[in-house]
Length: 247
Ligand code: NDP
Image (cartoon, rainbow, N blue to C red; front, side):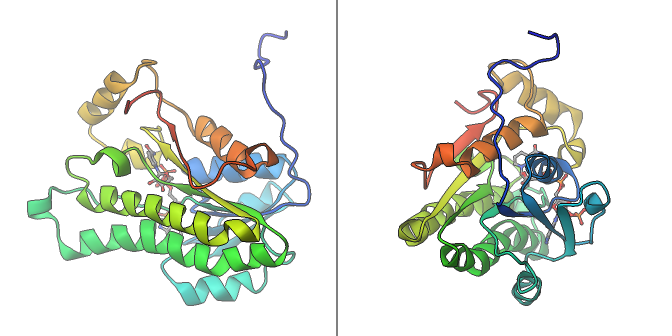
């Protein structure tokens, strides 16, 4: 085996699939969009600003969409042709503060983007997937939505809500051929994580059983699996990709 070759690497082929990835101008979402594009999917990036990933891939199309704005989602989806078969709800923000000090705005903004944004996208896109005979949705939640996290009441509540949303959507759209799952990352070094104090990053690393932290590609690998036909019997599940950070 060549030195840089990864063992047992699965090469998915997504030719003919049409994917929407939210919040994909950077971080984990960008990695997922790049991987899908490299595997021949037609990829639509929905982010607050119109991104430039389309300059690098002719099969990537960037749109300015705020996922909290249902009307904007509907308007842009009208131009997505062929209709979507994959949706990755990745857009997310943090506004960390302890409960006693958290403002209404900090609470609401995080619920709006992480939870209502995912709901808006599923409500608009899942019926279109059903129309073309099926599809697959992956919601990016967090281990902090499962275990709770000091200073993240808004984020933990939103991410826990996404798990309920995942399971309900799986039940409602399953018979229409749409699988809905969630991926729960632990700490991943992106701009979101770089805002955190060093002691929090050190603590996260200490919590892992691997003693290293996952990278955006590790999250993308799980997402690609759940989107693929290999996961056709998997729905309503939450896959932790966290180096054992929350066991
Ligand atoms: P980043 O902050 O690096 O990227 C998030 C992207 O989402 C940005 O491009 C951002 O745009 C976009 N976005 C924010 N608000 C909206 C909105 N209203 N509509 C559309 N797009 C929006 O985050 P990460 O890559 O680190 O995280 C991606 C996902 O993974 C998030 O859901 C996050 O909660 C989750 N996650 C991340 C972990 C980590 O350690 N990094 C751990 C666990 C979960 P803009 O540039 O305008 O802000």
